[in-house]
Amino acid sequence: MCTQFFAGRSAAALVLLACALYVALPAQAAGTLSVLGSHATAGGTEFTVKTQILVIMTLLGLLPVLMLMMTSFVRFVIVLSLLRQALGLQQGLPNRIVTGVALILTLLVMQPVGEQIWERAFLPYDQDRIGLEAALREASVPLSAFMLAQTSKAALQQISTLAHEAPVSDAASHAFTVKLAAFVLSELKTAFQIGCMLFIPFMVIDLVVSSVLMAMGMMMLSPLVISLPLKLLLFVLVDGWTLTVNTLVTSVRAY
Image 1 (tube, rainbow, N blue to C red):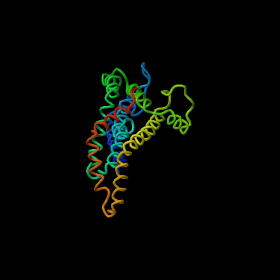
Image 2 (image 1 turned 45 degrees about the vertical axis):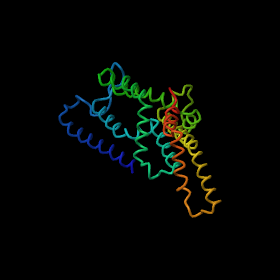
Image 3 (image 1 turned 60 degrees about the vertical axis):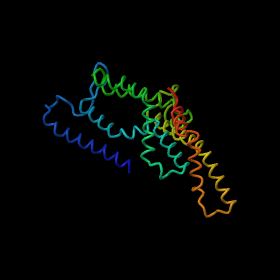
Image 4 (image 1 turned 90 degrees about the horizontal axis):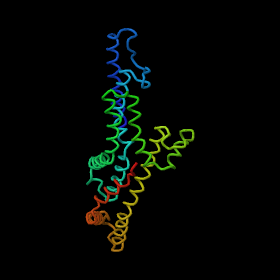
């Protein structure tokens, strides 16, 4: 459903942009300005104004998906969801809270990357010192460095093989799509590893409570009624939220 929503937003933006271009066409003198394309400049290839608008509107439509896939949001939201399930708080901890906490932690971790993109790509482009193509290339440098720092070599090699990419000597020389796919695969693996470590103590409590209730012949009593307060008490006593947040933030490697 979310994918259909984001796709609808992107399609609507492209339709509106196409209508604007159609209205603006009669006002242009023949041969004075191309509608879409690029032209050569002293600094390299530069897109026309309308092409830049098309690219920017498309990126804005895909921004939610990019936010999810190119940052640590996937790792954070999976670990928090697994923690909620381990505690047995499916109803007590709403999805919006889990998503909000993951988003705040993502903004905290991605702040250095965002500052570099702002200084190296957005400001020069806003001040007309570089073109859109150069700005996108500059923005991909710190983002690629961040993703490669979190990506395992095995995942990168696997995705490179699946993409039929030629061998490269430097990991940064891989195509951006290869690095992105390998980064997502590594994030999923890391998230489940952290989630398994969080699950173990709460699973032990569930096993102990179930064994005690069965030994006492209280098989009609749900173990969740007894184990939930015990798990919450343990989580509060060890300051579980602080430990969880510290684990998530420190698990992100510096680049």
